Length: 108
Image (cartoon, rainbow, N blue to C red):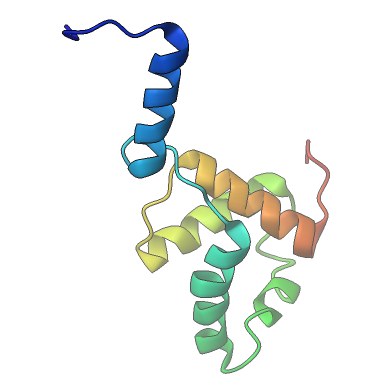
């Protein structure tokens, strides 16, 4: 029990300040898919291809045929890279890659 009384507005401000001070505690962290892609995906793909990491996206027609397969591929790569992403973060990365490289329809 809190030994003092806060009105609802003051309570909301306190919660917001704590969330801003400790962004990882609430489980909600910004996931900048572009930066994460550059840091992890592109770097790994460049090592695999010996140069342009984007070549892997152009050569994945047999591996990725729709948005569902792309989601599975992102999860496969995430696991291979040892990254601890939530299901939501995997979906965000799938959406980023789909928009940038593939163009699958949402229901595909």
